[in-house]
Length: 263
Image 1 (tube, rainbow, N blue to C red):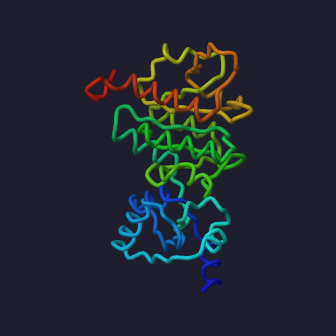
Image 2: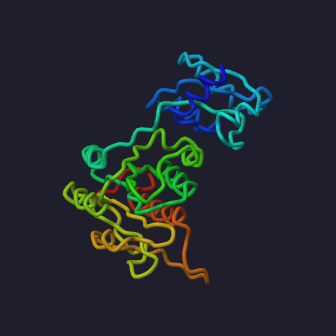
């Protein structure tokens, strides 16, 4: 049965690790075809995965760790992988419009050239945890949602709409037409984050790890915000900066009782 398994893995997304597999089962957004477990694994979370797979009628097979590493094409599988239908990207305008119709304060993140898969995965995880409605990626010259990204996101990508834009500046213009305020993250020259008004329909734009916001994207921003950095190091990791700005946006929007503060 080795050859069919390899062939199936080549045409499927390989989900690595307990978190990614569990959240794919919970979300139910795409079909999980089968699950492979290492025979000698002692991972406590796998019992929940096996039980949910049984409820959904998904085949579960125990294999050697060498076999698991071969199917996963990596040793970083934590004793479990799943083969799932390929990840499906959303349409940027559709998810942004849907978010605006559901809430007076929609919040989306647009990433202008994040190239590192671990960085992208971490941003997706932070965005889902902090209640972001959607994340928009460029179609070209940026990291895509791969197995490494899904693993770094710890399953967050299964719950969070992720869209791709062919032309990011044009996409931002369309978000403006939907009522979004375009807020760019700048290393310097922006309004200090704690002084910025983020209580509005917001699209946060974060630039690439090395080049920041491209001129065509920066020019579409209605405002720029900067994180005050009194230390001696000149910049933050893009993922950390995104997390800080998103937390401030949600802090401004939420009263102590958890109600939305609407202007």
